[in-house]
Length: 225
Ligand code: 5OB
Image (cartoon, rainbow, N blue to C red):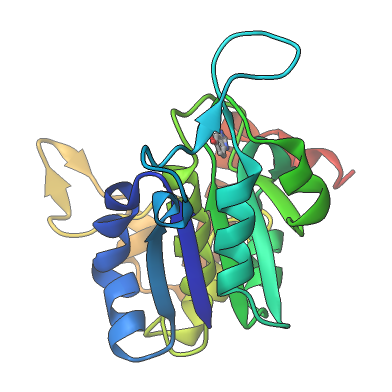
């Protein structure tokens, strides 16, 4: 998969996308990731990327010209153009799975005040938000989406099964995990996990997953009668 990120803050994306699985995916040529500075597509001496809003109001709006120039220079006929914006559709594991099927993603990161709407109407295929909170700009949101998509690409995860079993893929949260030592500061690991009874362990984990989901994420249980 090819991924182009277009941002005003390339350094905000660089480090998190250069570590761990993202690093290996690039070294193994599973993903070809490029991070671009939107200012490279400006034409004026000041490299202007934003301007005051028509109709008045606070803040600045990102100008359309550099964004159109960037996407038009990067895209081919199988590109999906994504805009990171708080007004977008909420990003989910389902959407990550769908995006993992694409050949080329172009991810545009706006700043929080907004973007000329002609970009949304005439250039963008999909507007994505990562959740209901304010961020200073879309670069960190883009990193979240790219991390979630790239780990699903064939050959990125060591264990093919682990993508399947994760929280959200299963529709429930995972239960608690423990490792050595079996006793730490008087707190013991639940006996069942040391029992060697795999059926009982599986049942316990399922039950704990349901309990945790009910406590922390009741919304995940709601449509399931
Ligand atoms: N807040 N998702 C939640 C977002 C966001 C802010 C963004 C982009 C995606 O840009 C300011």
